[in-house]
Image (tube, rainbow, N blue to C red; front, top):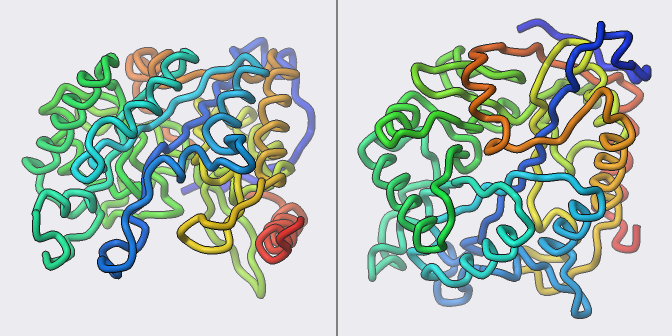
Amino acid sequence: MPVRSATTPVCTRAEHGGVSPTEVCLTIDTEFSIGGAFAYSARYRPLSSELVDCTIKGRSEGLEFLLRTLRDFRVPATFFVEVLQCFYFGERPMGRIVERIAEEGHDLELHLHPGWLRFRDPAWRYAALAGDDCATRPADELREMIEFGFSQFSAWRLALPKALRAGSFSCGPALHQAMSACGMTLGSNIGLALYRHQDPEFHLASGRRLFGGVLEVPALTYAAKSLPGGSRLRLLAITSTSWREMEALLWAARRAAISPVVVLTHPFEFVKHRDFRYRDTRRNTVNQNRLERLLDFITRHSDAFSMTTFAQSGAEWFAAGSRPGDLLQVPTALALARTAENAANTLIWQY
């Protein structure tokens, strides 16, 4: 896989021969958490809207922060909504959330975490743990999950989803078979930094690739130097990537004709928490500032970049077919600065 270094010169449309703006798609995985219920069933219950709303002093610093910010910059986003949690919570808790998102006109697509299927068993506290990987499930079971997702979208009075994202980016051929059987042609199931399938065809860092009748548009993976040496793969995500790295990667993607650039985030990334139950939280100003700077940058450089969604551009991407992109690499100085910033943000509560 070719590697391209990312630097940060300002490139204009004229410098690129008047080509169309590079598309950027902000994707927001909107999900609940099992919250330790399987490991400590007598002590913990799963977490629902508190992991999405992230309310601090009566103000939502999760979903509502996202919606406010998107509204302020007048840009759309794709929300991948997890549906299998309905086997524990029913349809209403997530239903209230998708109503808010739909009111703002954003794109709502399908997200699956199979670990929630354990709650179908009334004796789930004693059932064997089956895991949360879509890649290890047979196509027939995956098809049933997708069809269940369709039924939930219908119950929420939403248009049927056009795109799918597997939980933890666990994707393999069986998932594409299931998607094809259900008439789904768009996937954002590959995040090479998080999950690497044994088939090298799935080692897609950027761009897009057709797998039979399914077009995969991965969350962008890039390479970054790490200490004490070497490099590691990282996802282009708000919580893991500094603003300066994002800026460098966007310009590098434009030079390399990589489009769309898919960015990952979650509502809970915009708060800090002292424990996994989110009982003591505060605003994550570092991550909130990263999102604001990203959207400000794109709106200021509208000649070079444009925000889009899977619903808005997916058909055009599919018609254009495969165009795999390179593995981008951020400069060492930016990677080291991000390491320090993320460490400070994690260790210093007031940072």
